[in-house]
Length: 423
Picture 1 (tube, helix red, strand yellow):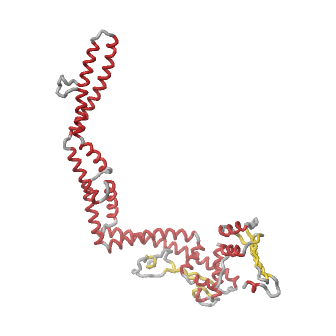
Picture 2: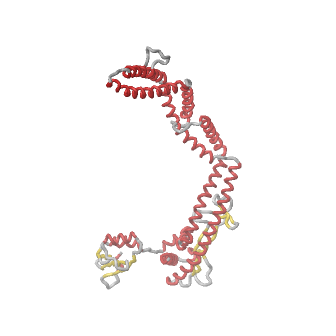
Picture 3: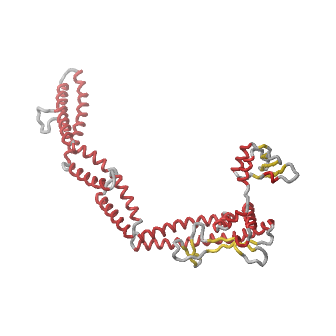
């Protein structure tokens, strides 16, 4: 319990520390919320006291705070190492992550390029496998899509054409009614088409009125003549437009039949592929896109295989750069850890970090050839990293978890954390 921390004969036990908050946002927020005072250099003092009567007190930045506040702060700023932490060092991925953290951008940059090429390479490998193993099924699907495209291309619909045809059909279906109305209006304006004098039309009547007024000796009546002339001009224009409209109606008597036939062709497509013509065109675009990925011909498969091999070469180049960066970082990191361990009662110990590639055979779906050897192209590269400990001069180099005791492993981990923190 906490009372065991109080030395015999003493009334209290104290532990005090000065912490640099740096960029630790979580720690800064805890200090701010507690109302603690931060020194000019950005650090804060934390104090914990336990008395023999069981009472416990905590202070942060000159303020009395609940003990839990110091616990929260310590989680943000303190890494506690014990013998159980050795389990972390037993994981190869953790050992590789240590190098990558230490190397920083020197590894991060080639690793990012490697991953980008690897993603593309895997996509091509997967597509090639898919096309090869499902060639019959994909060929059947391609035939269905090809049939649909042939049918659509034969009709060659235009965007929005079905809507336009519907409006045109409505107008053509009412053509007789339109012809009757326009013919009657034209006759009322221009007179009988056959020149019947008994049906003079508005233009004839205005002409007759103009003649009567022109022959009058009354000045008032004569002045009305020009106004009738204006009305005659307007009626002539209306008559001409009605005549043109009638000619349009009579231009193609079979047009309605043609438009209805076109509409039937479009409806045959909309029943099978989509709700409207625009949807049919979208289906065709999608079908062409899908067919581009369904080509199972020898030429298409050969092209994919060529692309796969080209990407594999590029991937190997990035993997090699990544390995070289790790090898360089590993030597520097091993030297720094070894130096740090001399202050942890392990002055005779020496750390080495090996960076090697695990050879695989062609059955590995992620195999790539690097410097003439097939190795596994994982998401973090092709490297296996291992921490090796030489306990003292003359001792054989062994994997760190085999050469070190639990306590020594904890000190190795502490040395690593210190080196990374300095980095």
